[in-house]
Image (cartoon, rainbow, N blue to C red; front, side, top):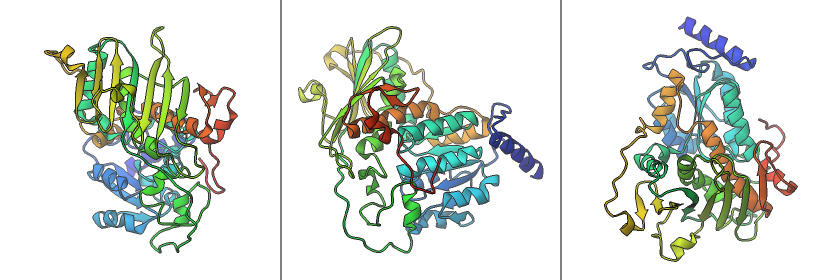
Amino acid sequence: MPKRVNRRELLRSATLAGVGVWIAGGASPAADKSPNEKLDVAVVGCGNRGAANLGGVSSENIVALCDVDDRQAAGAYKQFPKARKFRDFRKMLDEVGRQVDAVVVSTPDHTHAPAAVMAMKMGKHCYCEKPMAHSVFEVRTMREVAQKNKLVTQLGTQIHAEPNYRRVVELVQSGAIGAVQEAHVWFGGSYAGRDRPTETPPVPPELDWDLWLGPAPVRPYHPCYLPGAWRRWWDFGTGAMGDFGCHYMDLPFWALGLRYPTRVEAEGPPVHPEGTPAWMIVRYEFPGKGGSPPIRLTWYDGGKRPELVRQGKVPDWHSAVLFVGSKGMLLADYTKRKLLPESQFAGFETPKPTIPDSIGHHREWIAACKSGGATTCNFDYSGALSEAVLLGCAAYRSGKKLDWDAKQLKAKDCPEVDRFVKPEYRQGWTL
């Protein structure tokens, strides 16, 4: 064991110095582990999605658990009594960072980036819940740090690992519906926010409210924000699109090979300074391939639907993805798919599977951490997806059509969007 620890420290030192050491295709600090050796994992955020992600990595050695709310963390603390317990992830990483191989981040959106970036700068592999972060700038920073330090990463878009998405991608890429230049994505739920509450009840003793706020502006505690309703507030979440955009937009991103949009515009009810909207429609244009026309992708939430659905030409599923091709259409959700119009595809022979089934979303990440292999939702692929999702929210809040320069993270002649692309952190918090 001392030999392994010394080697790990050597790799970590090189990473912190920016040398970017790469051994046997693996990244510091877990590249020297055999497939049968457990990772040493620290977990930030232990309730709700955090509990599910903790379950996904429970086969490994859970070294440390961090949560600002003892109530939310109670189950995890009971399940892993030997793990060290922390409220502040910065203190946790300072104290146990040397023995940790990887970190799982499952906090509310506004603290994804501070926790993940700190861990990755220390050379730790990272699994992070979706969306990757709270702003486009944070996502880009996470991707760049992961690439620089050659780390294994995975975004929590668990549906990506399910068989149905693979079969849909195969259908689109096989040309079953012809050339696709148009896609529609809708989510049936609504995350309407509201005015900030005026009451100031006492903070429960189990909760560290200041740490929960993290880099967000200071405001009084109120139970309307947590454990889950924070998604309805711009300071902490990004509404329905932030919660489900990465899941459903993942499918056209994968099938059509999308990266960064060149144009984004959004509509919805009047922008509220505090709360997310009851509905939103976001229209994207992505560069076409090989000189083909731009690919148009439209997002809808809060009960809004594409015109094809309203006309009765496409079934009205609660939440779905619709590919519109030159030879037909393909409708899909998490578990099912349908070629349209059905009469046109009667007797259609589905192509043989070409995309291997996943070993499991969390297992992919664990195996890659040990081998230096790849994951399907790494921060490069998922970073572009998350940036698009968050850019849609930024376009809505700015009220402007964005001609987007992804390289510079700038919209042409639109300084109004800058504060949503890169929000300010409150004093004491940084990337």
